[in-house]
Length: 34
Picture 1 (spheres, helix red, strand yellow):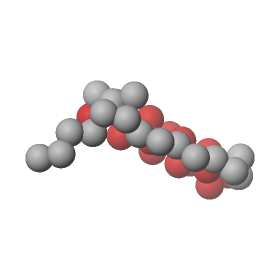
Picture 2 (cartoon, rainbow, N blue to C red):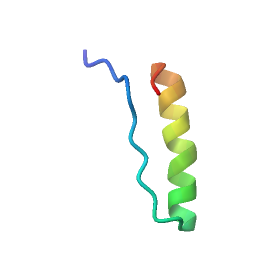
Picture 3 (tube, helix red, strand yellow):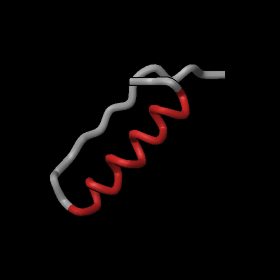
Picture 4 (cartoon, helix red, strand yellow):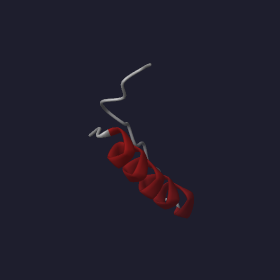
């Protein structure tokens, strides 16, 4: 199994990227990543 340690969050400051931010945070918390 691949261990996820870092999650990259690129943004263009649109409303969609705001939603992606919360998704990235949830993934980071789930996988104990930064």
